[in-house]
Length: 304
Image (cartoon, rainbow, N blue to C red; front, side):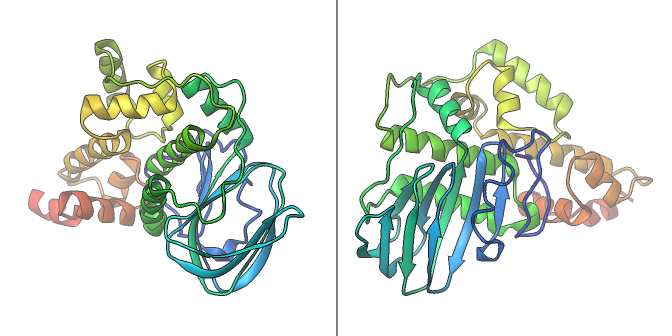
């Protein structure tokens, strides 16, 4: 659940706060597409040719179709297979310890989100005061546009490869888990939602913390604990208070610092990248070009 970190498109990113289940995605072959493992769980942008699979995991998995795929046949456990054309935005939920079988006649593209049992239970307790989590499979063909929006945002991050922002990825996985609990949890209890921003005290405290620690790899849980909020409540309250989500606020702090260091002639661009918390010189360059429309080399040249 790094904030802004590097790595190849198919690698599993590591995390200063290690993933609860670092091998949670191992049940899906590496070659299906880019993946990231975070503290909360993991996500895979999966593109697969026609084929079949039998799936089983001890954790929660959900898949959202990113493109229509005709001729799918699916079944849970020993049920009779259902054959249908999967539309864009269709969601499928595979609860822990339930075997599923799937065959597909055309290429299929989806976003697979995995959340460990421990983290799903923690989200239920922190966000909704739910004593139990009981997500069940939804009817085949169910379209979930809210899940689709989150899946498309995850796809964009995973496609960025080295520039993937892990704080954002973990935030999206957290929000995806909250959506599943709000929409598909049979054991739903009292729902509690934070509607306002951070208190003045929490605002001052989180701003000071970020200004002192913005070069470190931070998690949503790290930041939420400073304000004594659950991750979901923190994300909403922080965004309302600061006008942007935590990963963008953190990114701006890093880029501001990088611009100052680049004016120092004795510090190389590679050293600036390291001092500002970027994974490499190329990561700093691509990020600065995307968000500031300038490259580190251009700033270096201007400062001479």
